[in-house]
Length: 265
Image 1 (cartoon, rainbow, N blue to C red):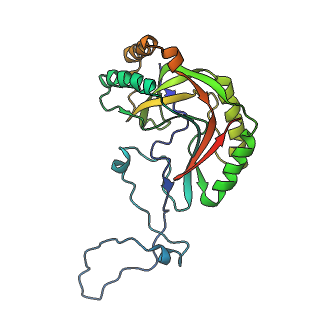
Image 2 (image 1 turned 90 degrees about the vertical axis):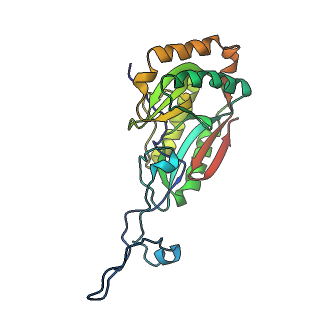
Image 3 (image 1 turned 120 degrees about the vertical axis):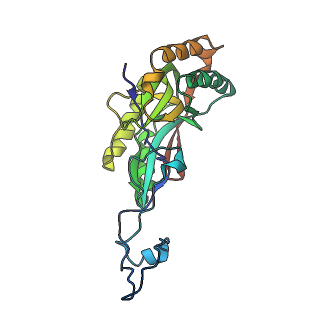
């Protein structure tokens, strides 16, 4: 069984503002004839100077160690903001108790797995918006989802996901009821994406809540026996049927470091 494609994640911190482009700083560092060149030490160029040369800018190093070893799917570029649309999931104490049982068991197969810091269900892939398009994009989303009602869904099927580049692996809980309502939401989000000439969602999405992740492609270690055991833990957990039923009450858009919430009716 092959790992399902990950829904809506960039393989790096897609929530960070994409910054810097492939520009060359004007001028050259010369030295007098007969003089040995001084050791080169790159200093950041002040924004006030860069503003004088709109076509010039230095590219910052993209150090994957700063964001857990994750590798970016698109480079930082000044004025571009990584954007993601999703339904937030507010984890109750009982949900975290279940995760406290699931994660250590999964770590016996893949020790490098770590818990997600927050939980959600994606309605879009990570896309890049120019800064001046953020507010019009959010307004278009609000208009599209204004008539949507809140709905219940259940996410109780353990499933293993990888991102498209196979650089990250996730353990998730797949939606088993409420799928149609999520598809309806995605249909409206996709229409907004098309208006802004952005990538739409996957053709056959697997809506899910990611529980834990690791760097690299670990689906072979996690599928099969491990997956069956994780599903047994979920099935035998006290009140799991009620615990894993939730309400979709709002849509959220994260663009760079900005959050926009759109309550459902």
